Image (cartoon, rainbow, N blue to C red):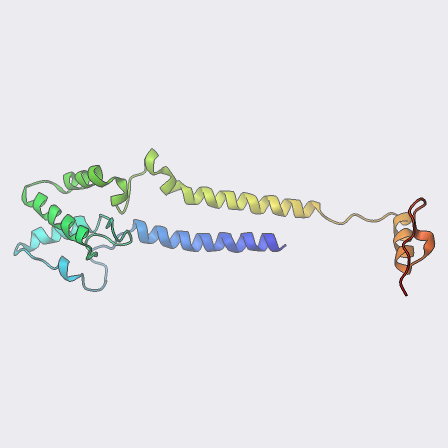
Length: 185
């Protein structure tokens, strides 16, 4: 019973923690969502507000490789600042948002995206939690099945009599050929 309870609690904790991490890791904040003021380094440094808006939109789709739990728009890490400058320079050079994202993925891999694409190399990222959940459910089912099989069988009449005589301490309960242990007073 304790193993099954532990497995159920573990599965629930896994679901809660995993769902929270997936939500945080794969749903970047939208520009319209309320959040605290961006770090000083993300404040517009160029007079072109439209360019800065595009820089921040792209930066919110990219994960900070130093912080890993923040977008490069939210991070104050030196690498995040450099990446924002690189995005800004590429936008000024006339590259599209898609080209910039492809460049970042080519350079840093799919991990840099907050929402990596579903493909073979990211399959465990997308389907791993569900496989672990299924494995946990299978273990719980197997343990429950084994517990159902471990029901106590009914003793026969002879076995019940023998058990009763053993409990009463009768010498006749000792099996033939088995020496009786000495009693302590």
